[in-house]
Length: 395
View 1 (cartoon, helix red, strand yellow):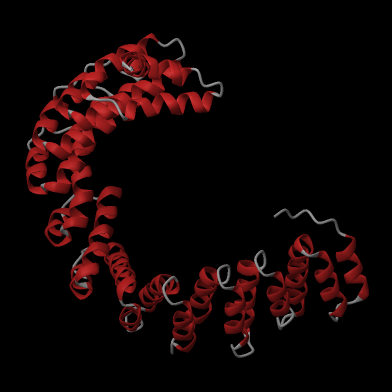
View 2: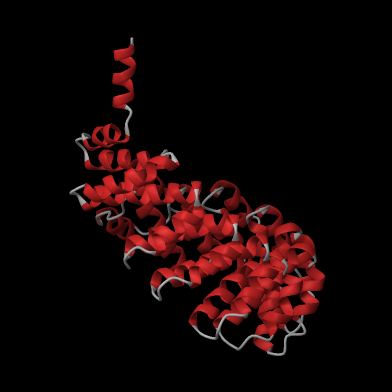
């Protein structure tokens, strides 16, 4: 019995587990097995595992064991793991490792992690560490992270740290972040942050977010922020957001806001969105608004969406809706798309759409497609051309 226990203990040593993993014939299974060893190491086993990884001849095997070992070390003792990784030679392995241990370290002690990152040698790994630590620290204490970042010397590290913090801040407290963001230098980052403020603020108080957006001095920023706020509002109350958008002026702003609302509305209640946009007094948004609803819904519920299109009054908007439906639903329910294609008023578009539907339909169900074509009123010459054309579509 003692001998059996001894054998079991021997077979469970780290070295034995590594050899067992390396005995896997398939390379993917071997790398997965080595990686799994790293995920379950004890703190005491980590130095041995790292040394064993260095002694492996295969670079792939080295990386499989080393990467998960370092990540595991970061989970068990992030300060020690960070110090070890920070001292590694520059390279991809160091960058990948610093990403995981930085998150773990900053989660447990943001200030200590930030201090340690600044002591690293300049390079890609330090840049990654500073950015990740700033972001992680900001999630738990944005004021402390901001104070630290603002005290850094001007330069790339400070810019990277502040960028990471700002993008956390605009989501966690958009009201407090808004005046700071407004005063940032003009550029892509400022624009992106302004839009994030509008979207996040509108989640809790859409009217206040829109009032703030209207105060932005640059007209393009103001209009985009208003649209983003209304779009975010539509996630929780699309009816109210749509009613508000429909009253905006000028016309171009109203159209943008209405269409943004409809896109969000369509993924929640497409039928309600379709009915609302179809009945809206401003007919200039009917065609693009209906198209956006159909683009979302037709691939998912093609039969239902086809019924909505058929209920539209005959005219240009219905014809446009048929075209959108054919594009969106043809690959999923070609028989419904074909049925609507034949109801297109313009004869040239009618023929083009019908041919498109036939090609898709024939690729999946040639007998049904041929039977449908036979019953249509197209000239026999046209039918012959369609039937003789080789199908190049693949499902």
